[in-house]
Length: 387
Image 1: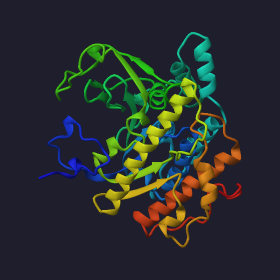
Image 2: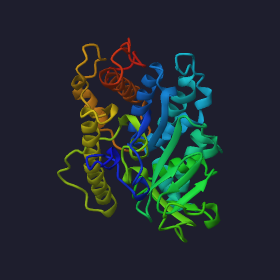
Image 3: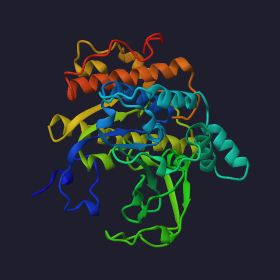
């Protein structure tokens, strides 16, 4: 009998180690998509609402890619500082998570990394990791993430194997290459690999020793040099642009925060290789993201899974709540169209993105997960210009 994991309508890919495994277990996981600073701030608003609702301590797993991995890394590194009360609300959420994320969003880090990486010794991804280290993570490694739960999974794409490379505290692995236990990779480097947007910020190269890997025990067909010594990674969104795979296969209740922008028509696409490649990448990303989104929403509506999906391109009226926060679609569409960059955003725009993530997450939670959850009285930034 076919298990749900092997359902062809599932948005997660079946790989060899999955075969014969039972379906997902009870528990709730959160997926944070890619999308640069736009997604990072949108997710910040969603996390703000989840925290107010007392849901963060209930999460078993937080799986992220690209821009989502920036805020996941900050949340994970500062988890012990959140000071959860008896209701599961982190009383220090603003100081531990909001402030460092907003500080980073006030700086441009992608263009300096590209220019300095091109002109001086050191690659562009190394410069990007250095910026993350200076602004957010210091000398923290994967071992500074919290013990489970929740387990933080920072996802990148292995260019060599074509599979997902997962950074976690207990191990990092690629199901074809193998597993390194208790990795001490810098957190800044893991986030840089997850957000190594091609072609300009990619690839990130991990120099490892073959002896770092555990002996193969799951039929890893690429457990050999150079796969085990010179690992070449790119943006996690290339493989899984919703950060869905490692959560969907494991847990029955799934929350998906999608900060990916929709694709706009471009009457005169650029002909130079860099901008043409970027446009083609956006086309591919948009199609894969749309397919995964449809499959997630279908599974939730069909009752195959519990949980909720919300996206930066969603229309809040679709959730059919009489008391949702006011978010006119013509304004939220402009927020969804912000370019996928690691480029400075002015304070008012940051606040509107956070407000939008907060409001649409609230609508999704109350419509699909917890109808008894009280409606919020106002936005996190009520004095900001409305969405």
